[in-house]
Length: 286
Length: 150
Ligand code: SF4
Image (cartoon, rainbow over all chains, first blue to last red; front, side, top):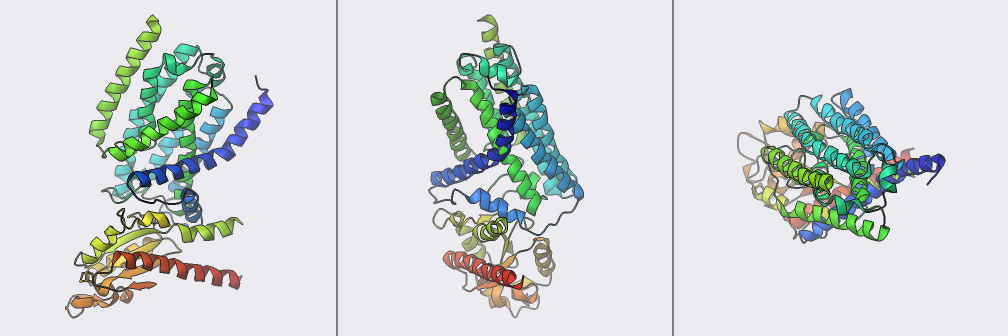
């Protein structure tokens, strides 16, 4: 067991290192995506160039709420990662993460631009879709290990994946929606034109867009961290598991077209709830 | 050091917004062709972002007329500094074949300052990519001058 000081230090370190890891993963993601489309793709460091450039741009906002929301979003995401790495309570972490996600929408709602408004509404629907799934994943972890504390989950001596294989698939759905991968890139999509311009991000510009991007990096680290909890006993399996999970997300992203929320909500809920039900019954009986 | 990295990044990540003034669509198709695997502008960090508030480079195709000059000015004003403008095609440069039409104002530079002119009817994708890279070279010059002033 680690001492309290060590854990706090670890948490603070994670606040600094998580954006770097998240940025690199995003860069790798873009590179691989380009490769799948037989393009050369941007350099690995591209996400950092983008954010630094945005940071240096002239500051223009239509509304102070945008700036405020961007800061709350990034603070909440950083706090999520911090709480995760100091091995805090999983439910608390989910709530803090949800606050950040909702503030992204609040900022977008503060401007009368129709693109931003529709984008924010769709983002709320996406949150509405993945939040129950994440909660179910966390609840089933607690059902197996007997506690919501990450430290207790870590102390559990057999891999969770063996007991909760279906929950891992559920988490995969939540991951795809959270990272806005196709077919779930409904509220905003990273590339090219779509009818929503940049959806929920439309009105964030310059430095505030950079902040939302950094917040997104924190989220990437957080969701991968959640996946990591499924196999904490052995590094040799944990790392390939994470790589394969993310690779599957990228492949699905490239292979799928964007769908509508009318499809997303029932499909994801029914599959997610169905899988959870089966898995939880199985634990209960077993 | 951080400032240096920002300046370097400005040259490495030009996001473009493409505005079709009164183009015949020839130049637009060539501009969009830049996104295909054949030309793949993302290797220069260029994204077609479609939102003036996020963009660094404005690519304008086609003639400007009395109706759309307001839109052109509006889109230009929404872009935060530093920003560059690339005019594409004979129409964007001077009005091209439409220059004598009664409703036509002329080239893009009649309304907003233009940094790079890409000729052709339509401008080739290679030339358009070159135009954006040329705009970055100009931005690099401006950065140097800005540093000297201080
Ligand atoms: S320059 Fe030629 S191709 Fe381009 S918009 Fe004008 S007429 Fe069309």
